[in-house]
View 1 (tube, rainbow, N blue to C red):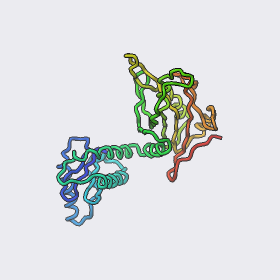
View 2 (cartoon, rainbow, N blue to C red):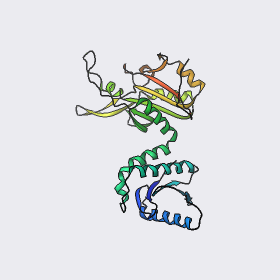
View 3 (tube, rainbow, N blue to C red):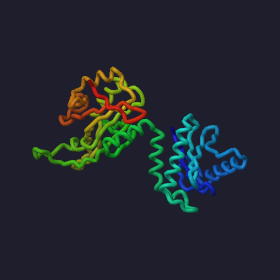
View 4 (cartoon, rainbow, N blue to C red):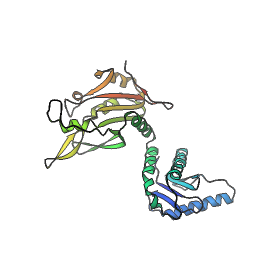
Length: 294
């Protein structure tokens, strides 16, 4: 779901305490308008107002203690999800921000990071839940819908990119300097997420894409494209098709885990690239099941 704006305002006065809006709307006018509608609803004994809509927008109102959180969204069916989000945002705001009377919305700008995180979750709900699971399991810094650069200069989108933050040692056991690409590669986990059944073609496309990304880095005053590869690759799907499983069974194995090797890529053949491929089938109740190939 797309959220176009968030305003948190004082329930009694209607004064905005926090605002993040896409369009050029005056937060004070907006919150005053919302507060007036709420008071009007109470006067008519219609009960608390939880949402109302115009021809194009839906405004969700979630009261919590002394604040009301308003979400502005396009008129689409996912109303309940947005209302639950608004309730949670209001609770977070009340718990984390000390409300000061008359303070402008800019005074609570530190709340923006929390709002951005909630926006991410509601825009990509399944990927966000997968990201939370993967972060818990593998650690690192997790990015959703990360932009990945190819040597040609074009960009792809990786569903989830995990940066493990490995402190690289430029030396090797033999005393030779390690390639920069090899050191970079130790940091990353590439993840494919499918909210449904993943096909053989999707698995192959993901595996073949792993060798095509990198970064432009200045080296000796020259801008070079340095490739990086994943130290691990992960696929999370609700279900793996039988054809996908058959393909995965044909991959090399290590400790009964499928491995992705450099020789599988059409673009690069770096000898150090050999990473495990972890497979998970999603479960709505409980942790995802790791797929074990027979």
